Length: 235
Image (cartoon, rainbow, N blue to C red; front, side, top):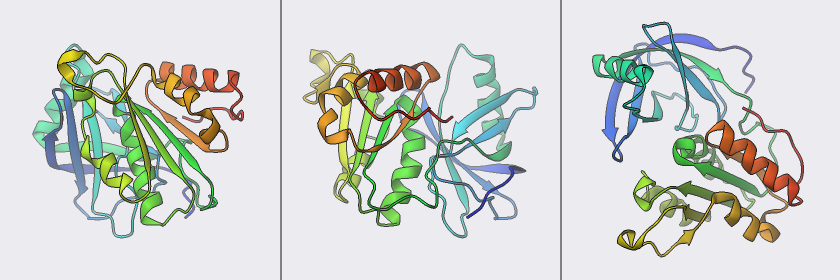
């Protein structure tokens, strides 16, 4: 698959589902039923009616005859852009362009290559696209997913990575601010601390990091400082 330029199109909002207190799964469909090709891990741009643009990772893995695109969108009550976006979602039509982004799984990827996916918050959506693509195409290398959240309730699709574990994925959820009321028995602390604790089994992985720019570069810097192979982050 060779993708050279993005396409603009109008999509209908086929479905919305509240996954947590403020995160929605939004499914888009085109009137023509045809979606542009994209690589797993790329994102799309939503062009709002107020001339602002919002970028969202495509959570659905690309496939032939694809009918829908899945997005994971956090509603930010203090953001005018977020309020405008959700008004347009409620109206049922979004203008988008895709694909965009240089952080994705290439066609030429070695199926034996061990992979490390690191996600914070809704950064999980980008990892979902890549992981589902790998599982669908029978990737033979080990796959590790580290998903960081502030509280256990912030894992907005908690059962999905567990399902992937049944297909061989190694899932490592990490909570930074769990308290006694959460009854959390998993790993505590910062996401990069879990990565460093497991560095011996992760050192040879090809790594993808998704989250806020601050989180991505901070995690990257800490990993490089601790001996992980150096490669400039792609956005």
